[in-house]
Length: 243
Image 1 (cartoon, rainbow, N blue to C red):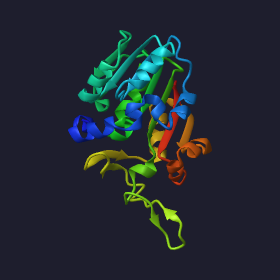
Image 2 (tube, rainbow, N blue to C red):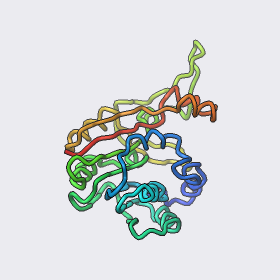
Image 3 (cartoon, rainbow, N blue to C red):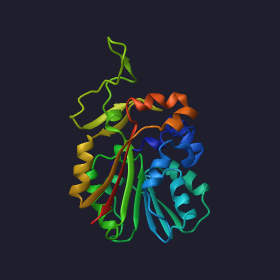
């Protein structure tokens, strides 16, 4: 079962203050790149996995989606999402992605933002998502880049020649890693890029896009502090389609 760190008081309080929590999709630096991977929403039945405060679910409906089933393990996140939503076509449901169970061929798009690096058993989750999609339907998701889930230190160190180095810890050894982010001892699941791709292909998806995301020059001009993200990409963006 996925550890529900989001219902822990200190973590939830910290998460609620992040720009992506306050401003929604516009506060997520990677959102323009994610949006470019998405098809037109008109008429689609959408499955939103790890929906958080429901920002994507509401956006999808505004863009013309027929319905959205938005699932999250956190009761606190879902309660906040419900408070912010007045739309009978959006259904919020509490569920653990480790044990995902949704109807077959019931959705025309699956979407997930920064959730799967908390999920240990993607060997179960990805095939369930594929069965839930109609043939050819897209599956778009983001995760923390594996460079982030395997660091050996909380930040850059300086090498002898003055270069900044992002030290890694046992990159090829996959599994549970602990980090201090918004709270102490947050558990994430480290996987290599190759493993994410292997799990997708093994579940019957066709990979259509893989991006190691970093901020654009225009974004850095507006937010100079983001320049560090050009040295090690924080997110991996993936698009696939069901067979």
